[in-house]
Image (cartoon, rainbow, N blue to C red; front, side):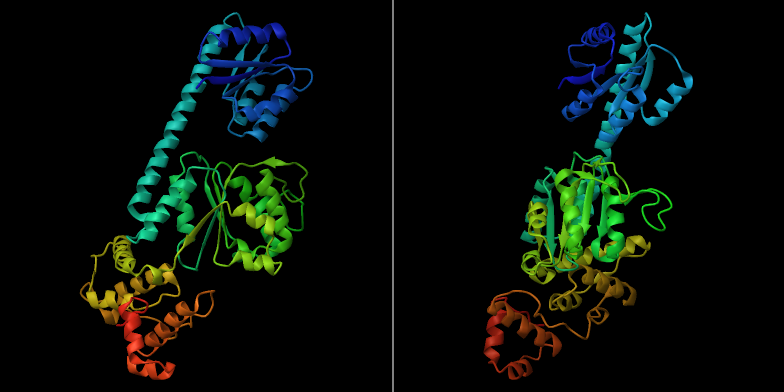
Amino acid sequence: MRYKIFVIDDDLWSSKKIKHILNMNPDHDVSLYSDPFKLLKDLSKKPDLVCVDFLMPEMDGKQLIDKIFKINPNQDILVISGQSNIPVVIDLLKAGVKDYIIKTEDLKNSLWKSVNNIKEKKKLTNEIKSLKKQLRNKSLQKADIIGKDLSIKLLNAHIEKAASTNINICITGETGTGKELVAKSIFNSAVNLSGEFVSINMSAIPSDLLESELFGHEKGAFTGADQRKIGLFEKANNGILFLDEIAEIDFELQAKLLRAIEERKIRRLGGNELINVNFKLVTATHKDLTKLIKQNKFREDLYYRIFGFPIHLIPLRDRRNDIPVLSEYFINSLAKQNNKKIPIIQDDAIKKLGNYTFPGNIRELKSIIELACVLCEDYIIKAKDIRLPNVKKAPFTEEKTLNEYNNEIIQYYLDKYNFNVKKVAQLLDIGVSTIYYLAKNNRIHLK
């Protein structure tokens, strides 16, 4: 691809001379400007380099440079001036200008040298970013998404697809299924992101503070705002903004969130300036947003804006064959963190785990395994070391078929009464043979 350069200078002869020098490299694509406002508008064409004459009548170089950086903080800028002013040079370099050269008889060599240095530094920066991305991906492949179930293979495929575009992503699933882990995996897999992974749990921030957290505020915007604060939208520039528990945001604030997502522009509280932000949006929720829309608790237009690429995480009880794999992973991780010998988990302990419904999903499994590692003796985890909650929650909180509810009701009472099939059959007024039939067809599990 050709290296795109914008040159702005109010002196037509000078600008044509600069263009001639730059065009001696056939890989350069040089455009001339005399109107700073036209140049600012054309920044959407994403030039690789902007060459700015410092002394111009309509808008001086410093003002233009500040506006360029507000539109694109990472823009490479080269200042070309007819005079040398050391304090000005120092201030410009501190502001982010890559170089400052003087219009002399040796302009050709100075310009060639400066542009080549800028190009080499950009190339080195991109290589460093690429290496960091590769390291993140290696870490991801080793540890992040664990499981052998078919759903995990599909999940990894969805992560790769979601990471390859700038489409908004919405992750759904019960509490503890790993929604934030998936969001981080998308970040690790995305090769076109240079910014950070910025996350916020909407339910953890009081509603009166949430707007300031997202958009930031100017000094004096409200009582206690003694200095400017950069919001999460700005912090996530060129990275990922992860809004966890999106359903918890107040209805009034949803309108401002929608506008920021659509326009990719935000305004700090107490401020007048519109700030351009470029981020990849990932949201997550354990609630049914369509139900909240019907209850007028969630905006329908916001729903369609965030639901570009849906990823649903199935509960752990529906991927029981991954329980041994996840258990081994948590055992190894805990041992490594504490510099301990890795315990061995016995089959009876795995079987006990397999018969449990895990309402807290993977997060609950991790907690149970960590406790078992502490309780076990001689680095052997037995069934007695697996401490399951005594009080189990009845599974009547989701929309499911009658057969699915029947299965879960029977499983609930089997868990509660230690798999006493006869007692459960009597309590539910069903035949013992019915319970064994369901177990044979893997609709329920017996100890």
